Length: 350
Image (cartoon, rainbow, N blue to C red; front, side, top):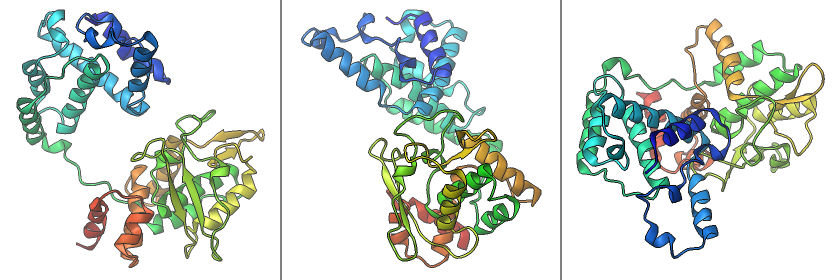
Protein backbone atom coordinates (compact mmCIF):
# COMPACT_ATOMS: atom_id res chain seq x y z
CA UNK A 1 0.00 0.00 0.00
CA UNK A 2 1.29 3.44 -0.86
CA UNK A 3 1.58 5.32 2.43
CA UNK A 4 0.06 8.80 2.82
CA UNK A 5 3.53 10.28 3.15
CA UNK A 6 4.56 8.71 -0.15
CA UNK A 7 1.46 10.08 -1.86
CA UNK A 8 2.03 13.49 -0.33
CA UNK A 9 5.61 13.53 -1.62
CA UNK A 10 4.34 12.63 -5.08
CA UNK A 11 1.78 15.44 -4.94
CA UNK A 12 4.45 17.93 -3.94
CA UNK A 13 6.56 16.73 -6.84
CA UNK A 14 3.64 17.14 -9.19
CA UNK A 15 3.15 20.71 -8.03
CA UNK A 16 6.75 21.88 -7.95
CA UNK A 17 8.84 19.91 -10.41
CA UNK A 18 9.04 20.51 -14.13
CA UNK A 19 10.23 17.07 -15.12
CA UNK A 20 8.52 13.79 -15.90
CA UNK A 21 9.88 12.28 -12.68
CA UNK A 22 7.51 14.19 -10.42
CA UNK A 23 5.33 11.08 -10.18
CA UNK A 24 8.36 8.87 -9.83
CA UNK A 25 7.55 7.90 -6.24
CA UNK A 26 4.49 6.04 -7.53
CA UNK A 27 6.40 2.80 -7.89
CA UNK A 28 3.94 -0.07 -8.38
CA UNK A 29 6.48 -2.58 -7.17
CA UNK A 30 6.37 -1.10 -3.67
CA UNK A 31 2.62 -1.55 -3.16
CA UNK A 32 1.23 -4.74 -1.65
CA UNK A 33 -2.03 -4.35 -3.58
CA UNK A 34 -0.26 -4.40 -6.95
CA UNK A 35 -1.08 -7.30 -9.22
CA UNK A 36 2.25 -9.06 -8.88
CA UNK A 37 1.28 -12.31 -10.64
CA UNK A 38 1.79 -10.78 -14.06
CA UNK A 39 4.87 -8.85 -13.04
CA UNK A 40 6.53 -12.02 -11.77
CA UNK A 41 6.45 -13.27 -15.35
CA UNK A 42 8.31 -10.20 -16.62
CA UNK A 43 11.90 -9.09 -16.29
CA UNK A 44 12.65 -6.09 -14.10
CA UNK A 45 13.59 -4.05 -17.16
CA UNK A 46 10.28 -4.83 -18.89
CA UNK A 47 8.27 -3.82 -15.83
CA UNK A 48 10.31 -0.64 -15.45
CA UNK A 49 9.70 0.25 -19.09
CA UNK A 50 5.96 -0.15 -18.64
CA UNK A 51 6.02 2.21 -15.68
CA UNK A 52 8.19 4.75 -17.49
CA UNK A 53 5.89 4.70 -20.52
CA UNK A 54 2.75 5.16 -18.42
CA UNK A 55 4.28 8.24 -16.77
CA UNK A 56 4.39 9.84 -20.21
CA UNK A 57 0.70 9.25 -20.91
CA UNK A 58 -0.24 12.61 -19.38
CA UNK A 59 0.84 16.11 -20.37
CA UNK A 60 2.92 18.00 -17.84
CA UNK A 61 0.21 20.60 -17.36
CA UNK A 62 -2.27 17.80 -16.66
CA UNK A 63 -0.02 16.24 -14.03
CA UNK A 64 0.28 19.58 -12.26
CA UNK A 65 -3.51 19.82 -12.06
CA UNK A 66 -3.72 16.20 -10.93
CA UNK A 67 -1.36 16.98 -8.08
CA UNK A 68 -3.86 19.51 -6.79
CA UNK A 69 -6.78 17.14 -7.29
CA UNK A 70 -5.08 14.31 -5.48
CA UNK A 71 -4.20 16.61 -2.59
CA UNK A 72 -7.89 17.51 -2.32
CA UNK A 73 -8.76 13.79 -2.13
CA UNK A 74 -6.23 13.30 0.66
CA UNK A 75 -7.60 16.25 2.59
CA UNK A 76 -11.14 14.92 2.24
CA UNK A 77 -10.12 11.48 3.56
CA UNK A 78 -8.33 13.10 6.49
CA UNK A 79 -11.36 15.26 7.31
CA UNK A 80 -13.60 12.18 7.29
CA UNK A 81 -11.11 10.15 9.36
CA UNK A 82 -10.94 7.46 6.68
CA UNK A 83 -8.36 4.84 7.76
CA UNK A 84 -5.27 4.84 5.58
CA UNK A 85 -5.81 1.30 4.40
CA UNK A 86 -9.31 2.19 3.16
CA UNK A 87 -8.29 5.29 1.22
CA UNK A 88 -6.42 3.60 -1.62
CA UNK A 89 -7.41 1.82 -3.69
CA UNK A 90 -10.67 3.73 -3.36
CA UNK A 91 -14.06 2.05 -3.51
CA UNK A 92 -16.88 3.68 -5.46
CA UNK A 93 -18.76 4.96 -2.43
CA UNK A 94 -15.68 6.84 -1.23
CA UNK A 95 -15.22 8.29 -4.70
CA UNK A 96 -18.85 9.39 -4.77
CA UNK A 97 -18.54 10.96 -1.33
CA UNK A 98 -15.43 12.85 -2.41
CA UNK A 99 -17.07 14.06 -5.64
CA UNK A 100 -20.20 15.17 -3.75
CA UNK A 101 -18.31 16.84 -0.89
CA UNK A 102 -18.21 20.22 -2.63
CA UNK A 103 -21.44 20.01 -4.60
CA UNK A 104 -22.97 23.46 -4.87
CA UNK A 105 -19.56 25.01 -4.16
CA UNK A 106 -17.50 24.18 -7.24
CA UNK A 107 -18.09 23.69 -10.95
CA UNK A 108 -18.73 20.21 -12.30
CA UNK A 109 -15.49 20.30 -14.28
CA UNK A 110 -13.55 20.84 -11.06
CA UNK A 111 -15.05 17.70 -9.51
CA UNK A 112 -14.36 15.68 -12.65
CA UNK A 113 -10.76 16.85 -12.67
CA UNK A 114 -10.20 15.79 -9.06
CA UNK A 115 -11.70 12.35 -9.74
CA UNK A 116 -9.49 12.03 -12.82
CA UNK A 117 -6.46 12.66 -10.60
CA UNK A 118 -7.44 9.81 -8.28
CA UNK A 119 -8.05 7.58 -11.29
CA UNK A 120 -4.56 8.39 -12.61
CA UNK A 121 -3.10 7.14 -9.32
CA UNK A 122 -4.90 3.81 -9.77
CA UNK A 123 -3.67 3.50 -13.35
CA UNK A 124 -0.08 4.23 -12.35
CA UNK A 125 -0.24 1.70 -9.53
CA UNK A 126 -2.00 -1.00 -11.57
CA UNK A 127 -4.94 -1.21 -9.18
CA UNK A 128 -8.60 -1.76 -10.13
CA UNK A 129 -10.62 1.39 -10.73
CA UNK A 130 -14.02 1.00 -9.10
CA UNK A 131 -15.68 4.12 -10.42
CA UNK A 132 -18.91 3.12 -12.17
CA UNK A 133 -22.40 4.28 -12.96
CA UNK A 134 -23.06 5.63 -9.45
CA UNK A 135 -19.98 7.84 -9.72
CA UNK A 136 -21.07 9.07 -13.16
CA UNK A 137 -24.46 10.09 -11.79
CA UNK A 138 -22.82 11.78 -8.81
CA UNK A 139 -20.62 13.83 -11.11
CA UNK A 140 -23.67 14.71 -13.19
CA UNK A 141 -25.38 15.93 -10.02
CA UNK A 142 -22.37 18.06 -9.08
CA UNK A 143 -22.49 19.60 -12.56
CA UNK A 144 -26.22 20.36 -12.21
CA UNK A 145 -25.59 21.96 -8.81
CA UNK A 146 -22.85 24.25 -10.14
CA UNK A 147 -23.38 27.74 -8.65
CA UNK A 148 -24.66 30.28 -11.14
CA UNK A 149 -21.67 32.50 -10.41
CA UNK A 150 -19.39 29.77 -11.79
CA UNK A 151 -21.18 29.63 -15.13
CA UNK A 152 -19.55 32.07 -17.51
CA UNK A 153 -20.29 32.94 -21.08
CA UNK A 154 -17.81 31.72 -23.65
CA UNK A 155 -14.73 33.87 -23.80
CA UNK A 156 -15.14 36.26 -26.74
CA UNK A 157 -12.72 35.66 -29.59
CA UNK A 158 -9.93 37.98 -30.66
CA UNK A 159 -10.92 39.98 -33.74
CA UNK A 160 -9.02 41.34 -36.72
CA UNK A 161 -9.68 44.83 -35.35
CA UNK A 162 -7.88 43.87 -32.14
CA UNK A 163 -4.85 42.74 -34.13
CA UNK A 164 -4.87 46.08 -35.92
CA UNK A 165 -4.89 47.75 -32.50
CA UNK A 166 -1.79 45.74 -31.58
CA UNK A 167 -0.09 46.91 -34.77
CA UNK A 168 -0.81 50.53 -33.91
CA UNK A 169 0.39 50.27 -30.32
CA UNK A 170 3.43 48.04 -30.74
CA UNK A 171 6.77 49.10 -32.20
CA UNK A 172 7.53 46.39 -34.71
CA UNK A 173 11.12 47.62 -34.90
CA UNK A 174 11.47 46.60 -31.26
CA UNK A 175 12.58 42.93 -30.93
CA UNK A 176 10.09 42.00 -28.22
CA UNK A 177 7.17 43.86 -29.80
CA UNK A 178 7.92 42.21 -33.13
CA UNK A 179 7.78 38.79 -31.44
CA UNK A 180 4.53 39.64 -29.66
CA UNK A 181 2.89 40.82 -32.87
CA UNK A 182 3.98 37.87 -35.02
CA UNK A 183 2.85 35.40 -32.34
CA UNK A 184 -0.58 37.02 -32.22
CA UNK A 185 -0.95 37.12 -36.01
CA UNK A 186 0.19 33.53 -36.53
CA UNK A 187 -2.01 32.17 -33.73
CA UNK A 188 -5.01 34.06 -35.09
CA UNK A 189 -4.77 33.40 -38.82
CA UNK A 190 -3.24 29.94 -38.40
CA UNK A 191 -5.92 28.95 -35.83
CA UNK A 192 -3.16 27.84 -33.48
CA UNK A 193 -3.36 27.33 -29.75
CA UNK A 194 -0.92 29.63 -27.95
CA UNK A 195 0.50 26.71 -25.97
CA UNK A 196 1.54 25.04 -29.24
CA UNK A 197 3.91 27.84 -30.24
CA UNK A 198 5.07 29.60 -27.08
CA UNK A 199 7.26 28.46 -24.22
CA UNK A 200 6.26 28.36 -20.57
CA UNK A 201 9.61 29.79 -19.48
CA UNK A 202 11.54 32.80 -20.72
CA UNK A 203 15.12 31.49 -20.59
CA UNK A 204 14.62 27.95 -21.77
CA UNK A 205 12.36 25.71 -23.78
CA UNK A 206 11.59 22.01 -24.02
CA UNK A 207 12.86 20.58 -27.32
CA UNK A 208 10.10 19.04 -29.37
CA UNK A 209 7.35 21.14 -27.81
CA UNK A 210 7.36 24.44 -29.71
CA UNK A 211 8.41 25.39 -33.27
CA UNK A 212 11.98 26.25 -34.16
CA UNK A 213 12.92 28.60 -36.98
CA UNK A 214 13.69 25.49 -39.03
CA UNK A 215 10.06 24.39 -38.61
CA UNK A 216 8.93 27.32 -40.75
CA UNK A 217 8.94 26.20 -44.38
CA UNK A 218 9.94 28.52 -47.23
CA UNK A 219 7.11 30.25 -49.12
CA UNK A 220 4.93 27.73 -50.96
CA UNK A 221 2.92 30.10 -53.16
CA UNK A 222 3.33 33.28 -55.16
CA UNK A 223 1.61 35.13 -52.30
CA UNK A 224 4.25 33.89 -49.86
CA UNK A 225 2.12 31.44 -47.86
CA UNK A 226 4.11 29.23 -45.49
CA UNK A 227 3.61 25.98 -43.62
CA UNK A 228 4.55 26.01 -39.94
CA UNK A 229 5.31 22.65 -38.37
CA UNK A 230 3.88 22.27 -34.87
CA UNK A 231 6.04 19.67 -33.07
CA UNK A 232 3.46 19.06 -30.35
CA UNK A 233 -0.28 19.74 -30.39
CA UNK A 234 -3.13 19.28 -27.96
CA UNK A 235 -4.91 16.75 -30.15
CA UNK A 236 -2.00 14.80 -31.65
CA UNK A 237 0.64 15.09 -28.96
CA UNK A 238 4.20 14.39 -30.11
CA UNK A 239 2.99 13.40 -33.57
CA UNK A 240 2.62 17.10 -34.20
CA UNK A 241 0.78 18.78 -37.04
CA UNK A 242 1.15 21.60 -39.55
CA UNK A 243 -0.47 25.03 -39.68
CA UNK A 244 -0.90 27.06 -42.84
CA UNK A 245 -0.02 30.75 -42.69
CA UNK A 246 -1.64 32.50 -45.63
CA UNK A 247 -1.27 36.05 -46.90
CA UNK A 248 -4.00 38.32 -45.50
CA UNK A 249 -5.13 41.83 -46.28
CA UNK A 250 -4.49 44.51 -43.71
CA UNK A 251 -1.82 45.14 -41.13
CA UNK A 252 -2.24 41.79 -39.37
CA UNK A 253 -0.90 39.82 -42.34
CA UNK A 254 1.09 36.96 -40.74
CA UNK A 255 3.50 36.71 -43.69
CA UNK A 256 4.68 40.30 -43.30
CA UNK A 257 4.80 39.85 -39.52
CA UNK A 258 6.99 36.74 -39.87
CA UNK A 259 9.38 38.42 -42.28
CA UNK A 260 9.71 41.47 -40.04
CA UNK A 261 10.25 39.33 -36.94
CA UNK A 262 12.98 37.23 -38.54
CA UNK A 263 14.73 40.35 -39.83
CA UNK A 264 14.60 42.19 -36.49
CA UNK A 265 15.53 39.27 -34.23
CA UNK A 266 17.87 37.25 -36.49
CA UNK A 267 17.18 33.89 -34.82
CA UNK A 268 19.31 30.82 -35.68
CA UNK A 269 17.47 27.89 -37.27
CA UNK A 270 17.87 25.65 -34.22
CA UNK A 271 16.21 28.02 -31.74
CA UNK A 272 12.52 28.74 -31.03
CA UNK A 273 10.83 30.73 -33.78
CA UNK A 274 9.02 32.99 -31.34
CA UNK A 275 12.09 34.26 -29.49
CA UNK A 276 13.37 37.81 -29.31
CA UNK A 277 16.55 39.69 -28.55
CA UNK A 278 16.99 41.36 -25.18
CA UNK A 279 18.90 44.59 -24.57
CA UNK A 280 22.18 42.71 -24.34
CA UNK A 281 21.55 41.04 -27.68
CA UNK A 282 20.81 37.61 -26.24
CA UNK A 283 17.82 35.53 -27.24
CA UNK A 284 15.00 34.69 -24.84
CA UNK A 285 11.71 32.89 -25.41
CA UNK A 286 8.47 34.80 -25.54
CA UNK A 287 6.14 33.18 -23.02
CA UNK A 288 2.38 32.73 -23.09
CA UNK A 289 2.01 34.83 -19.95
CA UNK A 290 3.97 37.78 -21.34
CA UNK A 291 2.13 37.68 -24.64
CA UNK A 292 -1.26 37.84 -22.96
CA UNK A 293 -0.19 40.50 -20.47
CA UNK A 294 1.04 42.80 -23.23
CA UNK A 295 -1.95 42.19 -25.49
CA UNK A 296 -4.52 42.65 -22.74
CA UNK A 297 -2.79 45.79 -21.52
CA UNK A 298 -3.26 47.35 -24.95
CA UNK A 299 -6.78 46.03 -25.43
CA UNK A 300 -7.97 47.02 -21.96
CA UNK A 301 -6.90 50.61 -22.62
CA UNK A 302 -9.15 50.50 -25.69
CA UNK A 303 -12.07 49.00 -23.70
CA UNK A 304 -11.81 45.51 -25.17
CA UNK A 305 -12.71 42.72 -22.70
CA UNK A 306 -9.86 40.57 -21.39
CA UNK A 307 -8.99 37.68 -23.67
CA UNK A 308 -7.30 34.34 -23.05
CA UNK A 309 -4.79 32.48 -25.20
CA UNK A 310 -7.53 30.28 -26.66
CA UNK A 311 -9.25 33.41 -27.98
CA UNK A 312 -6.71 33.71 -30.81
CA UNK A 313 -7.50 30.29 -32.26
CA UNK A 314 -11.26 30.76 -32.02
CA UNK A 315 -10.94 34.31 -33.30
CA UNK A 316 -9.20 33.20 -36.47
CA UNK A 317 -11.79 30.47 -36.96
CA UNK A 318 -14.63 32.99 -36.60
CA UNK A 319 -12.99 35.52 -38.91
CA UNK A 320 -12.44 32.98 -41.69
CA UNK A 321 -15.98 31.60 -41.46
CA UNK A 322 -17.55 35.06 -41.53
CA UNK A 323 -15.36 35.96 -44.51
CA UNK A 324 -17.07 33.19 -46.46
CA UNK A 325 -14.31 30.59 -46.38
CA UNK A 326 -15.79 27.11 -46.73
CA UNK A 327 -16.30 25.44 -43.32
CA UNK A 328 -14.55 22.35 -44.67
CA UNK A 329 -11.48 24.46 -45.51
CA UNK A 330 -11.57 26.20 -42.13
CA UNK A 331 -11.84 22.84 -40.38
CA UNK A 332 -8.84 21.49 -42.28
CA UNK A 333 -6.75 24.63 -41.73
CA UNK A 334 -7.60 24.70 -38.03
CA UNK A 335 -6.94 20.99 -37.56
CA UNK A 336 -10.39 20.62 -35.95
CA UNK A 337 -11.20 16.95 -35.35
CA UNK A 338 -14.96 17.57 -35.19
CA UNK A 339 -17.49 20.19 -36.23
CA UNK A 340 -17.36 21.78 -32.75
CA UNK A 341 -15.70 24.83 -34.34
CA UNK A 342 -19.02 25.75 -35.95
CA UNK A 343 -20.26 27.03 -32.58
CA UNK A 344 -18.10 30.14 -33.11
CA UNK A 345 -19.74 30.76 -36.47
CA UNK A 346 -23.26 30.30 -35.14
CA UNK A 347 -22.48 32.46 -32.11
CA UNK A 348 -21.28 35.31 -34.30
CA UNK A 349 -24.27 35.24 -36.63
CA UNK A 350 -27.01 34.82 -34.05
